[in-house]
Image 1 (cartoon, rainbow, N blue to C red):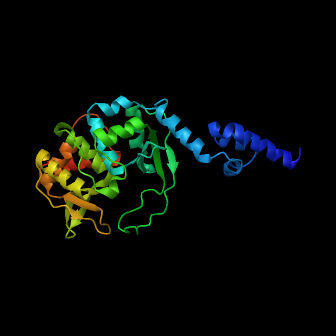
Image 2 (cartoon, rainbow, N blue to C red):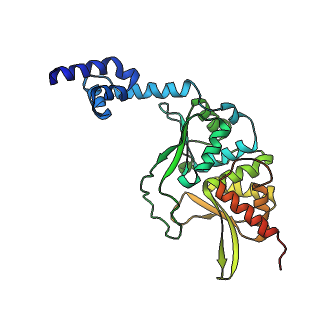
Image 3 (spheres, rainbow, N blue to C red):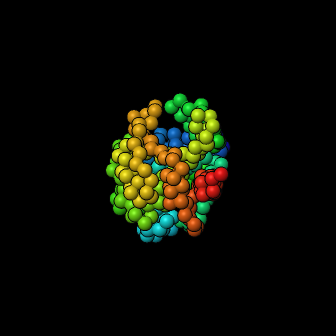
Length: 297
């Protein structure tokens, strides 16, 4: 078979099938790269974007591979999920790709597996190598893992629920949106989700001698100020000032370190029962609770 006839067959397949099937199967059949198939599609006048848009619409309006109803009824796990979505989730409201993405370092992947199980998500976790950050890394923070795990939910209906009903907008980190409406009875679980996504539970030595336990939360300015007010009112901890985080003009930080405050917060965010959590922070929280509740010598 001549080379000219080979390309004629490729072009014929592209014209007939590319818009509905995309590039993968055609590339396999003809032993070429997907990029070359897309190039031939453009050459013969079949727009690659048409197939991508149709595929996205099919994902978003067809079979849902997760339990949408989980997101419609308040529960401790939903409150945690909203807190984690706010801090570490990504929402795309682009008509060609309505989706919600979740990711974490590979060593914390059990948290995402637990989340998938609760929402009955049928997809697999992806393993991704993160892109190099443009921000200089703080050398005092150890690198836990350079690899990430992630999964995505494709659903226009879920995106509209999260952005409309729960007030978590797309591009939330850059627009400093107002705080979402979270019921008081579930706020401790929401706070745990915020901490699991963009907070810390750790200790350090004060003046080189005294062990001080610290709980810190990060967030955009309006979000964190209202979050701080609700935490103070509902958990009974002392009031704190939200301070701009060094190196960025978009993020503030608030932390508590007094023994009484740390104990109140940890009991409030990690009560007895079964619910979603980041395992290493949950284990640290339980350890700190036991240490702080123990009689002092």
